[in-house]
Amino acid sequence: MQSYPINKDDMDENAGASAQCANDNAPFKGIVGQSTTMQDVFRLVERVADSDSTILINGETGTGKGMIAHAIHKQSYRRDQPFVSINCGAIPENLLESELFGHIKGAFTGATANKIGKFEAANEGTIFLDEIGDMSMISR
Image (cartoon, rainbow, N blue to C red; front, side, top):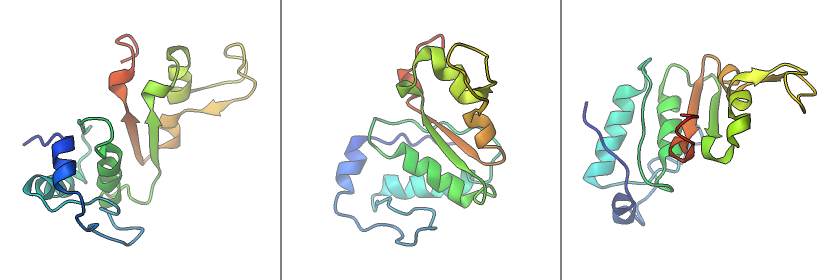
């Protein structure tokens, strides 16, 4: 499968392009792009949408990886299930496990109630782990 990393040059090339779709439920809502590279990305999104495989989306910060992940979700058979996005780089290392997998009351100091994790919240849907590159090597 061909890889299409998203980079800022492609974003600049597409500046001023009209949005692909204006409908709130449209898979490419808010994503602009008329360049050959972006059209290739759109086709790739359509091809992988119904895959049960883990999909790695790489690119520089601010290039729309989350928007692409959401577009994949909207085109998949999971579209009616939750889309859960989590910025892994913003969660302290000592809380990451609890955020992702949940905890029960009393599991650690400060755990005053049961809490479901992001994976359980995304059950049957999609979970987007953003900024995993900002996590420590141990946490990854």
